[in-house]
Each structure stands twice: as C-alpha cells, then as structure tokens.
Length: 218
Image 1: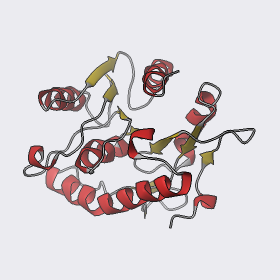
Image 2 (image 1 turned 90 degrees about the horizontal axis):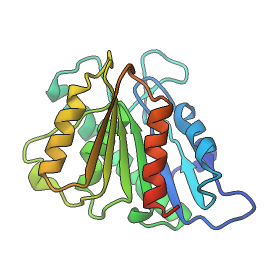
Image 3 (image 1 turned 60 degrees about the vertical axis):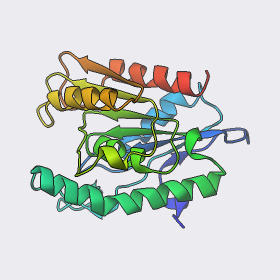
C-alpha cells in the first residue's frame, strides 16, 4: 500500500466528505511538489476533492528531489515505449491504492498530467478496465504501441493544452494526439496557446479548471 504520509496532498477542510480526486502526474526531473500548488488554487471551488501529487517512481541522474516516470536520455519512439511499459504497472497500482484509501471509483478521479506525466496518462488510462472521470494533458504526446487501438478499453473526456513555442516537446505532437484520439471516438478538445513554451500559464490553468468544474458539476 502506498504511504500517503510522504505524498503531497490536500484533503478537504472542516472534515468534509471526499467525493472525488485529482491526481497530478508531474514532468521529467520534477517532483510531487511541482503541481500540488494548483490544488491550493482550486480547492475552494472543489471543497470535496482530494488533490494528490505523487513523485514519479524513479530518481533522475540529477539527484536530489528530481524524479522521472521513465528515462529520457533518448527520445526515440521505441525507448519512450519501453519506459512507458515499465512505469505502467506502478501507475496502475498507485491508482488502485488511491481508490482504496479514499473509497473512490475510477470515474471519480481526474488526472492532470504535464509533459512526461501527460504521456503516462494518454498511454495508460485508456487501457484500464474502467474509465476515469477525465484527463488534462499538458505539453505531452500520445505514444502508440503495436495494436494500440485494439488495447483501448475505456473512453473518457480528454483536454489537451500545449504552448505553440514549446522548445522541449513540439506542439505538433498534441495536434497529432488530438486527431488520433478524436478518430478513436474520444471526447477530446485541444488548445494551442500562443507565446508559450514548455509550461502552463494562467490561460492553461483556466482551461483546466473549466474542465474540472464541468466534470465535477460545479
């Protein structure tokens, strides 16, 4: 069972019941603290939500508090695929632990992935038995393994956001992800943000919050 004492999380205040969750999946070389502040911004509108931001499972060579879902020394598709497959069981176990810990179902959980975290969400969540409430995918890409389409079990709403001037992952990857997911029958929307690099700005946060408000009926 995951030790939630060591994970950045925000529980509802005043002993309010937990009705749903947002799980943040950070990017390469970051850690759980990187995205948890978004939960602090959103918690007033979502007082029954638990916000959870785990560290990725593997340390980066940088040392310190730098973590990765998988190694990115090579961006060759086969290397990304190997990394995604290795990290997948860890993510899936974590999701099950969250469900057990907070008495939640898959469709009561929204995922917020940035960069490498978005890759994890786009690749793995659709292969789970039950659909989640939704996925926000920022500055990432959709990796397709062999028979990707045949492995899809769950369809859920997806919102994709990407800076047009991203110097790390070209925004064209999100355009391709959008077209592919749309062709596969997903409820998917895309926003390409002008004058933004590899990051999330105020418009991106509003884009995400509007999605969360809609899914969680606020």
